[in-house]
Image (cartoon, rainbow, N blue to C red; front, top):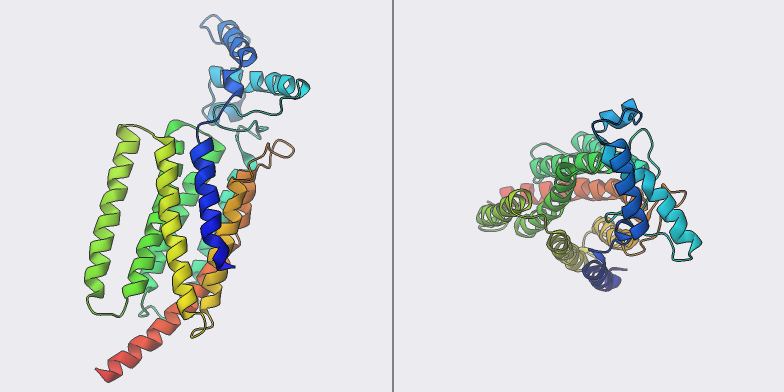
Length: 321
């Protein structure tokens, strides 16, 4: 199963390069004219009849945002009747709002991912000795993942510039820390392991700070952001895949890591199989979040067994010292 991982990464990479900027719905003349008329009629200072509901006001929806949402649906119907097919608007598929929530399914499934990390960390704390190697690192990993899924939830609830940037940076923090986790796992209990940990941590940390600064204060480059996430993700997946191939016969628990890595690669194909949302709620991205939620169970089970193995190895080395 691991042999298919490089092929999947290549497919995803080519897809993102091709599709990261596509959005035709909001550029259509029908949508533009509808929004223009709606704003002129309802969003001026003299307009009295256009009142947003309390949930929309709490979610920071504006009058112009409401015009775009209301004009989206007749434009969608026109595309469908013209047999053009459903088109995206501002880079997103059309979704039915629920209490002001833009993408209710993706928001809910992001919460499931967050809860999965919290529950599995509790299991990890019960079964692993606090003195075991990677005990602290696993806690940091969980914190970073929970932070990322928190912003993913907020972004899918309400897409504004700040939540969008935090969602992107949250995702990048997960994949970049995973690369760091892999590097220090390769070098743990070896000579100069602390030096490797420090140098790789500084390098990845400084790049993350640099990327965060440019994203916030220079330019939000969607294509570049997606490509570096894929690059770090590819390094992580390929690195762990090679590590698993090397050790799975010697350590049976390594099969959990191999299964996890393969499933991560396969579930990411949901991003390639992009399609209009089913029932205007469930799109491929939402289903991707749903598919990743149970994977946390598999990964933390591997971390529990790996920490136990490293603890035993550490004790053996201390006896020989």
